[in-house]
Amino acid sequence: MVEKLLQSGIHWEQQEFKRNEFLKTSGSTDTQIYFIEKGSVRIFMMDENEERIIRFGYTGNIIVSLDSFLSGNPSELYIQAIKKQ
Image (cartoon, rainbow, N blue to C red; front, side, top):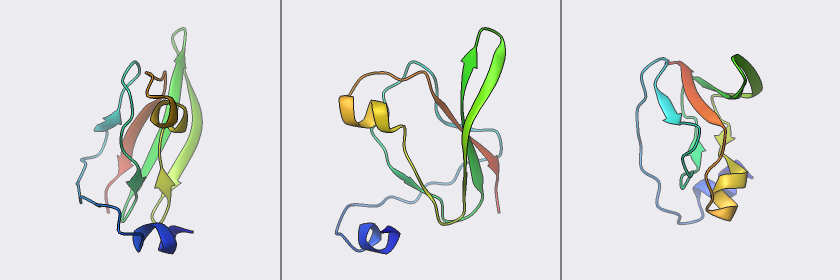
């Protein structure tokens, strides 16, 4: 599936994120699909004052805040780079 997406003709723009840098923050609308070429990210939300990790993404994964991407509405999810390789 990843190969089909990468070869689909979709415009891909390479971006580099530093460790702990946010790709998306709570309350923002996600308009991007991220392919992790190197490194890892975490997707989480805040529940009162506690973080709830939803998922990790690693090299070769595709990451998106799907609810926000499809609906065009803001999401409570954060996407944060946790390892740069």
